[in-house]
Length: 413
Ligand SMILES: [Zn+2]
Image 1 (tube, rainbow, N blue to C red):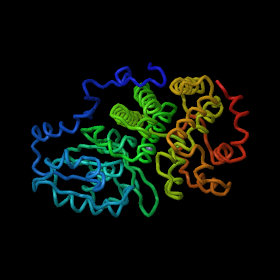
Image 2: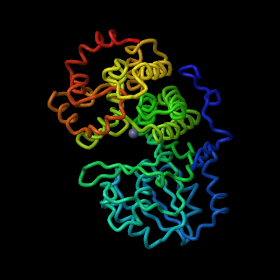
Image 3: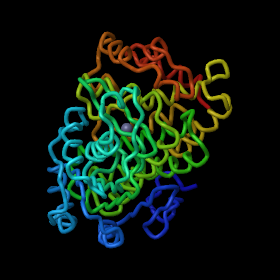
Image 4: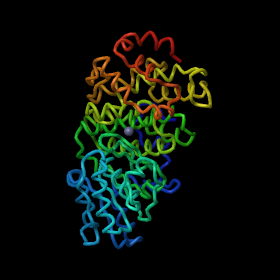
């Protein structure tokens, strides 16, 4: 176990050897030469037709174009770049049209979570007559045979390591979740993150941090997912302020690994209440995803730490959840729940982000009620302590926040 705050990458049990990670059905390449591996992959596979899903802006600004264009410049590559942030079904349909014409053997996605999710959706839905029915869970996914490489240009969503993709239909959020969506190869090259603006580094990095913390207490967590999540959370906590405020190659590389490892963790465990609460904050109030998730992380830590056998959702019992909470406090370098919550909030302040819902503009009880009512309660079933609209409102309302220090002291471990 690494000391909290350690900046030594090599001292962390990342499970990565020589910049390469082979687990189950995925290979990942890391470090400042990771993109160069595309040459040998193409040499070995010799695909006749490539389908490239590119975030046009990120492709040019991240330096990906300089590194990768040589592989796409032949007339065997079909490019799809015509889509908005946060995948919409209408954009997916446009991509499917092009994909069917191209009949690619290889799909390469370059960009943030949107591009990678878009490529997942196109591959997964191109073989069906009714994509919307698949998204709504009414028809099965027909697994695509094309090979799939993801090359992230942000460090946070972990989409390069997961088998799910988010898609919106008329503003309603859906998630596809199927083993065939997971990229066979992830190329995680921190050079592509060098030009990320501070605000994007902060928001996406927070997503990785929150995914890691939520993954540790998730009902779906296993010993394997907790190992990935512990490393991811420790890396993000130690390196996100530097990556945001004065980025250097060490902090960029650390965040790219944190993102990938948090993705691997939630691919097993799935996310919990803070993610469930974040979706209406993003869709209704335009709060960037990573920030939206982080706003309820400290309150949920306090809430979950007070779990009892009566309200424990995890069949392993309240003692098990308490042990996982202690693991989180360890990573945070805290000796009490109150200290852990304060550490999360100091991280948010250090990177210039709001530290509470109220600071982010969700100031009135009505606005909070609106957000909580929009939460899909099914998603809360992965939270270790039973959470209802009533308990969440009580936890997150401005009045309860003023009283929280006393409550937390009572719940302190
Ligand atoms: Zn997320």
